[in-house]
Image: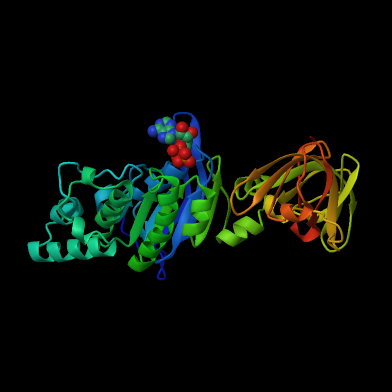
Length: 370
Ligand code: ADP
């Protein structure tokens, strides 16, 4: 194991140009990022993009073909799992069914031969942190999914790791509990002060839990930033499509205007938005507009600096807080998420209506001709 200290002000985790190949396929293609102490970073991306392989490289289950893994400035690329002092929480919880909650949590301390008194104190503290003191003597199967997840958290936290890795930790929970646990988990992770890296394919979960999101695609990092940056300023069509729910209007650039604006023609309709990337007249382009930025034009309420587009209404889906209006606009599907539908009165299928959205909410990316 190389223990070279490579820098004085170290990141808790630093990956440098990791490359991992399975058989003939390169599944990590130069992945590099860092995580500060106390920071929660999520690896987000579609299935198969390399999130778990990245996490397993930090843990030591995967040895990269090239690149380096540094923990607190120490090169651990070749170090075995048990020498890295990392806490881990898996999707399956991986609890020992025959051990009590207390003994599950105590396991890592017993392995490290921590004296009995200290062990008991630390397990009790860890169980208090996840609010499970009263369940110490139960077996895992006598607990709900959410409680088992918290036992897994306590077991990871009890060793006081500086780095905590979580692989889809909430994916086995039902939707409501999952949402509750997202908030709870963030509170817990912040309380520990550990650098946390977690893997998820769920963009909403990544947004709620993380300080920073690392968006991956096909073995590479395509964008990283705060949840708000990733949501509001996607740098590619991929990022725009993966984070949030958006409409895509495919057309051609007809004019490059001042102030970063471009005018595009979509099936003969002229729309304006902000150019994201190099665009010239004649280029194929896609305008991206988030569903919630679109509203139906009700009489006298048209925005001053808005794009408007006639559409054919197809159906409305009531989702509770809002209504999704599914339409066809310029021959392409178009969705508007609104609670304003009631102000326009009931709409029947086939009704022609106008939709509007601000130019400032319109991002235009280079696209392949559609
Ligand atoms: P994610 O976590 O983003 O779903 P993974 O890191 O699990 O992605 O996998 C990345 C790619 O590597 C996938 O194409 C997957 O099939 C492949 N892969 C993962 N583990 C192995 C393995 N042990 N052997 C061969 N291919 C693997």
